[in-house]
Image (spheres, one colour):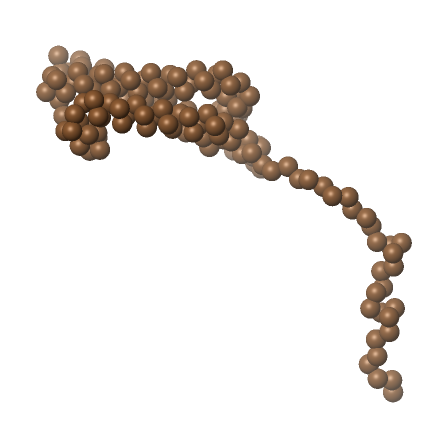
Length: 153
């Protein structure tokens, strides 16, 4: 009987001519715009977000609109507070207790800072979605102010 001896042919069965040479391939990273399931979500919404990514002017207009709605919210909040309404946001209530100038500076600087972050990360999907959500939410807040003005008057 022959002992368990492994010869060199068994160790390296693949010879040089059988080995494939693979060149280095750089794989693209997903940006969030290419989804695995093309039927997931709204196609128009995805086109809208791609448009924001590809057209910096459209994103700039969106972010300016968010900041203008933020200023309108601050002005309408000041007016409502002068008419006797109470601030519903507990953070802003505390800031308004320290003074309206401090509250205004905080509110404007936070939204401007978030807008700057969205602008810097505009090639990714989530920040663009955050910008659209901010525009929608500030639109709802302005509508709330308008309804409140009708009922307070």
